[in-house]
Amino acid sequence: MTTLDPRRLLLLLALAPLATGCVAEDDLDNLDVDGEGKSDNTPSTSPDRLLDVPFYFSVPTDTVTVALDRARYPYPTLWNPAIQTGPVGLRIIAVKQGNGVAAKQTARREMATKLAQAGVLQDGDLVLTFRPELAGTMAYPHIQMGVTHAGLVYTKNGAAFNIDSPLDSTYVGQFDAAHYAGNGSDDAGTDALHIVRPRGMTDARRAQLREWIGTLERNLSRINGARAQVKFQSDYLVPSYVSTTSTTRQTVTRLGLILLEVDQTSKQPMYCSEFAWHMLALSNCTAAEIRSAPAEGAACVDEVFAPMPLTATAATEVGMADGPLISLLALPEADRAPLVASIFKTGNAAKLSEGHRMVSEEVAPLMPPLQQLYDARAAGAPVEATAPSAALLNTKVANNYSPTTFLVQSMAGAATRPFDYVVTIGFVNAAGFEKAKLLAQRPVP
Image (tube, rainbow, N blue to C red; front, side, top):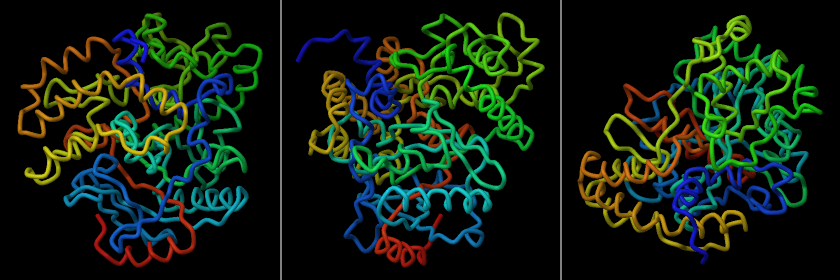
C-alpha cells in the first residue's frame, strides 16, 4: 500500500465516518453511497436479542438514564444486550415496517410523529445513522461504533423532522428521505438510528433552534443557490475553524450571519456532524445578538462540547476513538484483555462498501499503536499512564466533532457528560416486531 503522511492517516481515522456517511453528490464517483444498498438490521437468532451487536457497538447500561414514557407510544421498548456478557447493550424502540420505499417512508413518518408526541424525539436531539452490519469487518468502523452520519432533530406541528448536511432532498425531511428510507435502487436507507440529547437544551433554547431552522428553510434557496454558502464540506479532513483559521465562536457566528442573509459572500461548507454541532451552538443566540456580534464572534455562542481530541489524555476527557474503550471497561475485568483483539481484527471485509474499505486500508498503519493503548487500559493502566502516547496521537490531528463524537460524549462520566443516550430506533419486519414485543416484557433500563 502507498505510504501516506501520518497527519492524513490520523485525520482519516478521526473523520472516517464523514468519508462514507456524509457524502456530497460530487463525491459519489470516489466514495460509495453510504451502505451501498445493504440491509442494516439482521435479526438475531438468539432468544435474548433483537439484534446481534458486539460490545464495541454498545453503551454501558449505567449511561441509560433518560426516562421514556412508554405508555405514550405504541412501539415495544426492549433492552438488547451485547453479544458479550456484561452490562452493555442498547435500549431499542422497535418500529414495524413493510417492504419497499413507500412502506419505509410511512413507517418513518409515523414514528416521527408518535415519538415526538411522546417526548422521545425533541428539538436539538441528534439522530445518528447506525450500521450494525459493520460489526466484524475492520478496525476503523469498529472504532467509529458503526456510526456513519449525524442529523439534527426539530419539531413542527407536533411531529419530528430532520435537517442534515448535505441540505438536500436526499437527507432532509421527516426521516423519509433516501438516506433514511432508501431510494429503491442503490441505497436501502438505514434501519437503525441512535438518538442522543444535549443536556443544555432548555425550552427557550429549543424554541430558538426552531427559529434558526425556520430562517434557514426560508432562505436556503438563495443561500445555497448561486451563492453556495453552506454547501457540503467536501474537504472533510479538517473542520471549518481550522481551514479558515478562525475560532469556533467565529464560525458559529458566521453561520448565523449567513442564515440571516446579512453575510451574502462568505463560504462556510460543513459536513453533517459539523453542521449539527454549529446549529446547536447557535441555538443559544438570538438573531439580534448575531447581528450585533463583534469581529471575535458573539458571546452567546455556546458549544455543546469542545471539539474533541482523538483519544483522552486525562480522566476528565473523552476522545473520538474512545467509545469502544469505554464499553470495554464496563465489562468484567477478566474479560477485557482478550476482547481488545476483536475490535482491531479484520473479519468479513466484503460487508464494507468500497468507500469503507478504502478508508479502512488507509488507516491500517494507525491500528497497532491504538491497539497498544487499548491493551494497556484493558490491563488496568489508568488514563494517566497512557497519556504520553495519546498526546502524541492528538498532536497530529485537529480536535473535531465527527458523527461518533455525539455518541461517545453520551458515554462520558454521569456528572459531566454533555449528552445523554436516549434510545436506538430499530425498524424491523413483522417477525422482528413480534419478537420485540416479547423481549419488551423483560426489564428495560
